[in-house]
Length: 158
Length: 460
Image 1 (cartoon, one colour):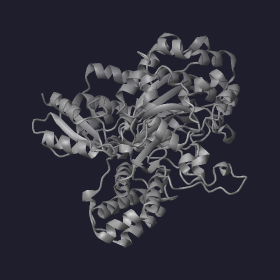
Image 2 (cartoon, rainbow over the protein chains, first blue to last red):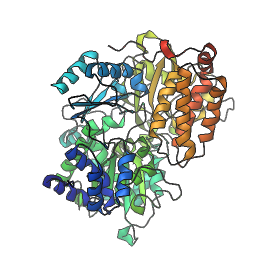
Image 3 (tube, one colour):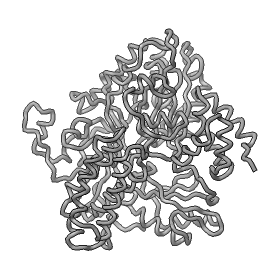
């Protein structure tokens, strides 16, 4: 079935289009809106954005594959990103990742069998002064301890 | 001497510090924008800004006022064909950098007020603040601030009653470090892959949408109201490095192996040692310092044993000749003088006992992941650097492969469209040169990283 944007998001898109002198500039904002709705930016979304903004599907696909936050395939209900870059690694990021893998029963990059959580490592999330940290959906969890990780994961798996 | 200031951070701890009411009450908010728009001409704003000696806070350290002066004099109002744009770089993604986030979260109105003054100075009516997508709270705070400023008549068609329309929009990235490079950011803003452009043309001539554009780091913009508020020359003189045209106050960060990591506002010119001891509360577990990365992962690592070499009395660094680089004031030119860079001046501290080979591998993994792939030396070189580091850590590399890393890194330098190449090669070369025995030990003994550590105290 072809992808269609919800009425509310369509209104948001209208407002976004007013911000830029070209339609192409709305490619990233519109992809974000689509992903918010569909969970990922598959080929149906690429086709939709291409038609909606009058840019080629090849261009849109190129954009989707360039940026790491556009999911080309379906992912879990919740996104867990653990920062693994040096300032976090110096304060235990690798241990946090290993611990999450153990608790969730998946390897980094995989989704739990019930489809609830996708665990991934992230490159620096600008939280170096409060390391180690993880991003869960839109929220940062900083100064992580084993106990905090337990709490966070328990809430997600509930 | 460490000189703490609180021009930007005064309201940081206050309840609802991000509200307009707090900004107006605590920081005299929007008085500067009101005065600038009502009493100054565009040219006067640029001349005044130059006196602040604000060296770009994003890492390259280019003087902000001078950058503003590159914008064409004619604007659409004066008959030019193309509009001008201000693009604010809030893509904070350099490993070790965590300062801009605090401004957006806790003092977003300073960013908005700075945008108004800067837009007026460069002849722009639209400003885009490009924020990395992950910083959802920052985006919400900025959008809230824009809404509040609009409601008060500080933005829109006639800000402060002046017939000079200003609109500010927040634009989300989508997870790509390279979009912090100014021309990659412009491509991304246009809805393209974030691939850097060849320069020239420079953004001041042909920037976003082919129009004259100024790209400034978010902190550079946020400090504008402070500088104009006290007079830009007075602002510059707060710095210990005013004579080196490195003025004012800025946010310094400390992270890694210290007891109390965080971000503080200081007059420009503290030393690494002061940051580590006074702000960072010393090294975790009372260890000695192995090394420090002065301002984000692209700035070459420094060791406390290194000394400043400036025997020439005319050298601006002569006063520190023979002293440890950790006792040299942190400034754009001082750090350059010792073969490193100030970068974003958020320091990553590495304690003794940490494996520097693993540190380098960790960073090279970052660069391999983030290379945009346009230029062969960077795309292939960053992958090569990471793979060989990995092989060394597994105890499987040869001395030839270790020596080949220098060639790979040198082959990236100067051979790429943007500075990402140098940003990968310079830290790689610094690690290789300054920790050669540690790299060799892996190869001579054929051991793997089984006993290597990155943490100073176990995570619990």
